[in-house]
Length: 328
Image (cartoon, rainbow, N blue to C red; front, side, top):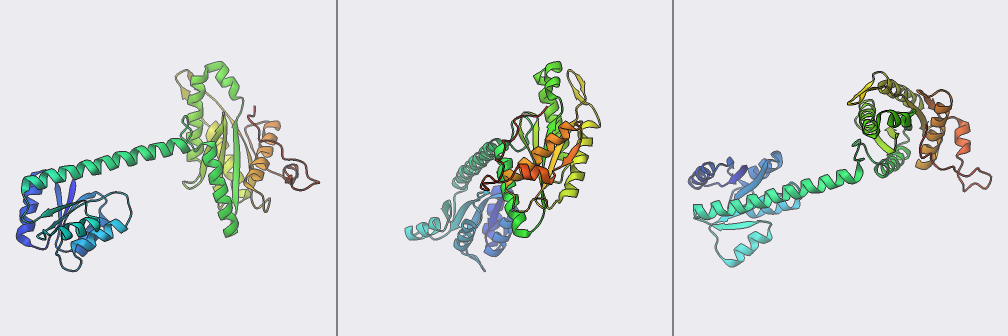
């Protein structure tokens, strides 16, 4: 593990560096508080730090304060080292953000044990962060395909639509559904169907930009949110996705499986002031058109699709129909 040693006294710094190196630490040494802050900001692997109280430019107390006022993660364990031994000094050091406090001249065995305790704190914090990120990923992603799940995708669509409106920029929604997927499950089994879904998800993901969002709505139905993308570009993207899915059979333990996908597209520029749900439903209506006109194709939503999805707040409008649970 890397450790930062900040001390302006050459003899003390050399002695401490010798101890730390002997204990297996990779030591980064600096001579003042300003250099200590720069080193900690530049190297995220520096998770332990021994900071002398009295240093030029920026003292150890100020180093502790600035570290604690910065990002909470990754956590840096700070050991304040000083000749000050008054109780009020110890309180001041700990109150500034130091995790531990050692009085010079320090005993090497005591320093070794306290650093070991600091390592445990850092390692525990890393485990907690990793567990939290795992839970966050699982809460937002589909367990089978690792794409965004329905809730996360709809939330992302809402955010992007607000941003699109604020910037007066286009946004496209793509609704996609595998063709005759029930036949895949019936012929090869659901385990093979899962392999097919995972591979289709992978192909959809590589067919869009890194900052586009791709999610699984459920079953064999997918959605993509394409910011900064108008209707014509969105149609081109959808056609590319159709080719990516169908151009080569999917290899599974049960044999190769050929699949195609149908896609509906709706763009914010086509339907000004449309809500997220209205755009999705327009794209879903276009998806039905793709299914009804032969499948394995991409269809752009039309004005007729929009009229079918007119807001229910308009007394003359047709009520919004529910999104399809599945297509064939």
